[in-house]
Amino acid sequence: MPTAVSPLASASLLVAVIGAGASGLVAARELRREGHRVVVFERGDQVGGTWIYSPKVESDLLGTNPDRAVVHSSLYQSLRTNLPRELMGFQDYPFVKREGDGRDGRRFPGHKEVLMYLQDFATEFGINELVRFETEVVSAKLVEGGKWKLTSKGRSGDRVEEIYDALVVCNGHYTQPRIADIPGIKVWPGKQMHSHNYRTPDRFQDQVVVVIGYGPSAVDIYIEVSGVAKEVHVAARSVADDKLGKLPGFKNVWLHSMIDSVHEDGRVVFNDGNAVYADVILHCTGYEHYFPFLETNGAVTVDDHCVEPLYKHVFPPALTPSLSFVGIPVKNVPFLMAELQSKWIAGILSNRIALPSKEEMMEDVKALYSSLETSGTPKRFAHHLAEGQQLPYNNWLAAQCGVPPVGEWRPKMYMAAAEGRALQPSTYRDNWEHDDLVLEAQKDFSRYL
Ligand code: FAD
Image (tube, rainbow, N blue to C red; front, side, top):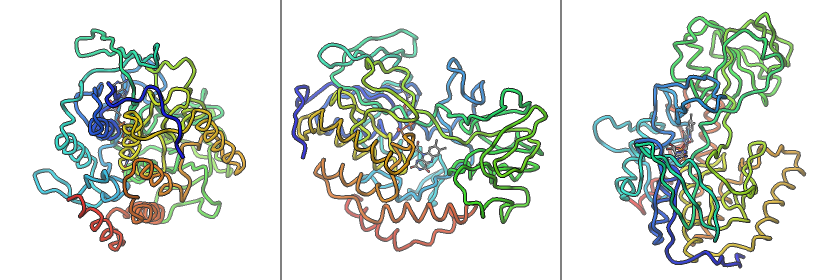
């Protein structure tokens, strides 16, 4: 049971939220509902974060140059959601079909529809007026009294310093590419890019392309690229041996084990012994957590894809409750999770909900790491909610906040979508067969609509 009450907690705090994507929008709403004063910093010129598609790509297609001009979103032009819309909305503001010009009523809509939904949400709850657009937080520094000195840079380029009681970090984690480490890559003569900079398949016309990765984006991208490329070779880490080889349903796509090495003559050699001469390697290898603005005197670090230490993936025990992170876990539904995490943070900051002692929180974090070690799971999966963990995690948050548990149709629908994606990657979005789950979702939504 939560026991300790932070000396910082009070009825109404001045809280800075970094980012106006899905997480920052719902954090702002929950904080304000709880009576806090909220300023949202957003370096872009509109709300929506990841869901603001840009045809621009970065100058460095691998995204490794820290001085490059960053394009925030990693969306490609053709992207449709990989989850049914019923799962994607906030709990009390369901993502239902809307009539109107340019609206996309499909169960797995295109990215523009998600952006419109987030814009609707921001308008409905009056969040836009809390946001300082085109204002980047360049430094957030812990100062005396556990407060935060924020330095932000606005349109004019002038820097502004302000003190906040608490900081909620919602800056997203799909912008800073993670690159595969490939023996021989320095002498390999081909081109490389990360999926962060993939927009359309045109540049791969008649080329031999190696795609590294087998996650949802990798699958969408190899399917799209196979329509124009000469050959596509997918290198995947965890695929059963009997699935390797030419992919059924495609005339020019092969599935391989991981890359063993690449060579000066252009060859890419896979662990299964096969080799191809390739023009391009496309890294669909995920993203790094990146907080270049955050100065915590070492209380929070990023190591091997983990933000640590974080109690329940949200609060660093040493800095509770003045610092929190929304949206870190993966293998969960992002919007609902952000909503529940935000309610929890808001309630803790107003002293309505209590946290355990710092020592107990650290013990909890250590228990997570030792359970990973016992099961032989690499540390980099610390923020992956294991199968079966999504509902308990969300319901643990709901219980802390005193709100009803999450509907059981949600993890079932999540699994149904994942299975569809695995079995029919090209068609699962238009062949949805789980109307029973949709009915359950609609029953749930009727409480809010
Ligand atoms: P973001 O949306 O990334 O928002 C972060 C915001 O912070 C941005 O607006 C950024 O400009 C701002 N920011 C960053 N740094 C600063 C700073 N220093 N100062 C000021 N502002 C700053 N989720 C689903 O539910 N369904 C899907 O189908 C799905 N598909 C996806 C496909 C792709 C290719 C990707 C990359 C992600 C996908 N996701 C999907 C996950 C998606 O990221 C989440 O749904 C959600 O948008 C995350 O929201 P967020 O607010 O945490 O982060």
